[in-house]
Every structure is written in structure tokens, then in C-alpha cells.
Length: 280
Ligand SMILES: [Zn+2]
Image (spheres, rainbow, N blue to C red):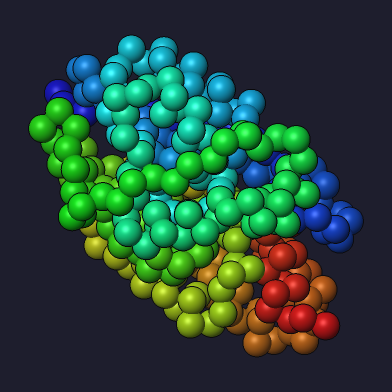
């Protein structure tokens, strides 16, 4: 029997992109996934949710595990992955929130009141937790859960800069942060061609670990966490690079990608990427 186990909690929320062209309304949502890695007595949580309500539901879920939460690891500096920190830290005072130096610094910028007011509040009015905090800086690139090693994997630029995954060698688990998506349009609004190539290298790095399980940060409600999503994410990036070359307007790029990936959720993410890639 392996010493550590893991489980997921996935929650649906609205897309952060508004003004998406009509036609894909039934797919206009996105999930966030958090992972609890646990042993006999202790647990580590990877990422949190965005809204106050979902953060409370997350709290109950962690309580129900019956484990003592020691650490919350934040994979990257997007609010939908760390806004729930304060609530968890209040309820689990022995737990420590940690991230890499670069992620912790970016989060301190992200939670500045002017950025919350200009970016997040208009997109999720009245839904954000009232208090936001940044994680502490992890010294080194490993920490432990009941004596088993958990390893930070620097991914570089995936859907934002300085992203990371968390790797648990003893059970072949990679919690990919937003490195791998499952049946969801990738968030490419922060990516130029160089960044997309960085993302492709990040996928190679995850693959080189030969994981048995790969948790996608955004996916379906009941994900299979199969490593096959590494290749699917790679294919999407190649399609986007090719489609960008062969189209001239945001709408054309959007429609071309939709014809290649008609069933992925969150077309808003694609629309944001198309507009960033081809500003009119
Ligand atoms: Zn995300």
C-alpha cells in the first residue's frame, strides 16, 4: 500500500472573459480543481478556489478528510488558485501557505487593492473573499508529508509566467497547476509565441517524469487525471500557433480554433486569446 493518497475537489464557475461571440453558451463555464494529498494523519492542499462561497465548501471538504492540514501549496499567481487562502489559514492555524519566490512575489502584486478593483471585482462582483493574503516563500524546492517527498517542478511560462507543478514521486502524481488542461480552452491571453514555446517545453518536462496521474487545473467536473492530457494540451498549442499564422482577425482565429476544438469548455478563454493575439 502506498503511504500517500490523493483526492480532488472540482467546482464550476463563470468564465473570466465577457463579451464572447454567441453560439457556445452551453460550454461557457470553467472548473477549478484543488488536490488534497494525504497520509494517515496529515494533509497537503494544492491550490484553492476563487470565490468566498467555494472557499467555504473547500474548508468543509478538508475538515471531512479528518487530516491535519500542514501545508497549502500554491502553483501559480492567478487569483482563481489562491484567493481562498485566508479562510483556510484562519481555520487551520497550524497550516502554512507556501509558493516559490517568484510566485509569492507575483501574488503580492495581484492582491494589491487597485488590481483587485480593476480586474477581479468587475468579473466576479460580490463573490471574492474580503481578505486576501499571499503565501510565504518556500526555501528550496521540496517539502515533506509524513516523511514522503513533495517536489516543486518549475514550469516557466504556461498560462502565466513562473508557473509550477507539484510532483509526488512515491505515488507518481503530478499536480500540474495550469500546465495541463482537460477538455478546456487554454488561457493564452498572456502568451506570445515565445511563451507558447515555453509552455510546450513545460509539457515535455512533465512528461519526462513519467507520471501515472496528472491533475489538470481546469477540466471537466469528473476528471480522469490521465497523463494523456499532456499530449492533448500540446496538440492544442500547436493548433493555436498554426491557426494564428493562417488567420488575420480575432474572429477568424476564434472560429478556426473552435472548428478544431468544438467541444472544449470555456470558449471565453479562447476569445480572450484571439483578441490578445490579433488586436483590431
Ligand atoms: Zn487557472
